Length: 420
Ligand SMILES: Cc1ncc(COP(=O)(O)O)c(C=O)c1O
Image 1: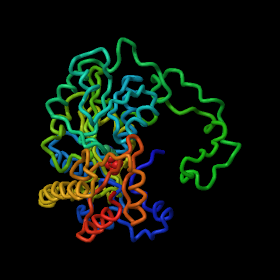
Image 2 (image 1 turned 180 degrees about the vertical axis):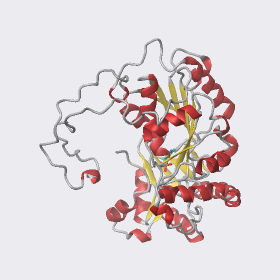
Image 3 (image 1 turned 90 degrees about the horizontal axis):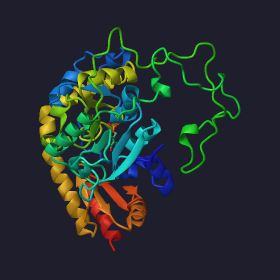
Image 4 (image 1 turned 30 degrees about the horizontal axis):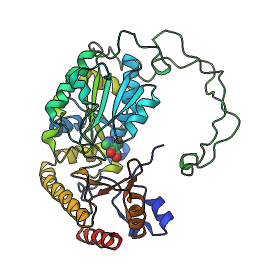
């Protein structure tokens, strides 16, 4: 699994500083998030229901026509490459880099060809789409504003790219090759080796907490079911009826707007019903509800239906749906939070610049500093109990926002001690 910010427990062990004493600036989560009220007991006891008003709350908040709730935008990041492959076969996908690395990982894991598109210093590679050069993509994945570089795009430019992608078709000439998770209905199943339980090495008890950079525990030889093989579309069968038509295959523009909430005028949410345009939103950043695991996919209704079938029932738990509904409807809180975050981001940029670390970019929820000293500064701040997010290529640090007055003072004081 990829590394992300927010691994405070590990830092506490590594630096011998108790968990409670840390200032965690390693994520882009709002430190003054939406205040969660007590949760009604029945939300724990009842199965979540799709028609509880959450989608409507999301549509109203995002200004979108259709919204599908998912267990964090991460769930959609992993599912969309599988869905694309089901619908259109393997493709060539351009992914903004550096960027939230889960996108490239998910498209690659699903068997697509992933091409990194450098963003941050202008738009050289992406601009080829404008010029209609041969080198183009079936799918383009952008993070807007980009995490970690902060790169932004004009909505009109994005819409022009979307139009070009949607028009060009999801594959070129070739029909999609059959593949393991989208075998044609009634067609032959791909071979899975002979069935059987798994033998050989039993898993180690901490298989999902393996040492960093250590070897993966052995999985032995494959196997798993006896008797009937699964049906080819077992996790994407239409629920009780025909699937809504998805129109002819076209390329996709996927825009991850996880950090967009403070600047809604730049969002493409209002256009997300257009075929081939998919917008991802998260409640983890602006609302500070990262632990609730709620996000949304905004897209045309037919595509959301397919995605919902792929993800299965009850994708978001009842308590999280309840909280998300309330937060999305709390317009006074949202209106107050936006200018506060924008001001805090500007203040953070000033503090960093004051200590010789001028940010190269950022968003309302983080600032990024590119410096060859990134590793050294990361470790020095950690010794002061301040956790930042370190990137190795290119060497850089991402700083989230301090929340309280004393946290601002603490960051300032620590930076003063480690300034060159
Ligand atoms: C750009 C971006 N997109 C999506 C995510 C996933 O967010 P979540 O699954 O909490 O909605 C992250 C998390 O850090 C992110 O940085």
